[in-house]
Amino acid sequence: MSNVEGLLEPKRSVWLFVCSVIVLAACLVSISLALAAFAVTWDPCSIMGGVLMLPPPLALAVQQYRGTFRFNAKAASVSAVLLFLVCGLAFAALATTLVDLVFSGVRIPWLSLFLPLLVIGTLGGVSASVNLAWSRHLERATNADGASLERTQYTMRELLVAVAAIACMTTLVIYLVRSTPPRFAENVSRDEAPFGLPAEATEVSFCQGFRGTIAYEFTIDESGFVVWVESGIGSLESASANVSVQPITTPYSVRRYDALTAKVTGAGAITITDGLYYEWSKEDRGVYAAFDRTTNRAYYYAHFH
Image 1 (cartoon, rainbow, N blue to C red):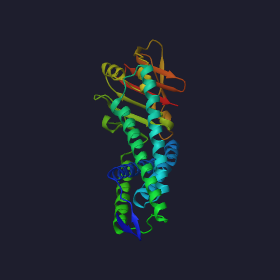
Image 2: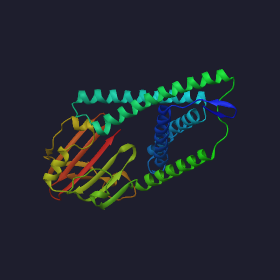
Image 3: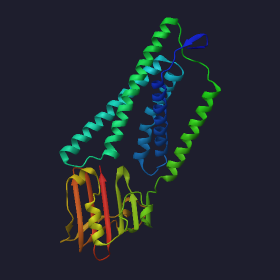
Image 4: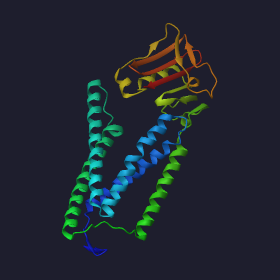
């Protein structure tokens, strides 16, 4: 133990240090994501998401730092509570999703869904337990010495670390803002589209609407369209319905990308008389795709609200 301001400083375990670094790094990334969400000015949902997403990681970062590096027992206890909440929410989301996937017959997306939630839940639970033990240790040490062990002065090393952390967070926010795709674009390449498209897709036009609504169109041949649809478009829920592509026997209409913004002029919808279509809807969610044989043009529209 070392002496700090006349009081004996409890020794921090390696587990506490490692968990604290992981929690603080995760909080900085989450804060950066929340701040970057404010850059999507055309989408009120993104801005509201940033407002809701910013306070929790900010509060956790402050309490985690105060508890681990400033020896504040109450802050360590608050960190434990917040991390237990993170753990509970992660495992609840994991259980709910797994039940839905099992009953719907969809293949479980291990790498994109299962493992991230499992890792977040596990790390949250372990970090919460470590913080809780540390807070109790600080409380016992405070009671034994009759005075608080919380540090009140900041060292030069702490200030340098804080500056480095802010610089990393600023860099990440700038990167996220610059890499955010535009709301709409016309006649761009497949690589410029903010979603997955077949390798042979060309002349892509798209627009993102509010609350996850999206519409786009591109040029492709008929076999490529069929393979693309059958590979799974829309969501896990729509993919589990096993809806197949159908021939168009009566005029079929689908919304176009220009219907989602006033900054692009157009008809807002296309009616196809010769081609194929895919259609899935449930409650307030829907995925629609159509192929026009006369132009070799594919159209896609989806809403998840």
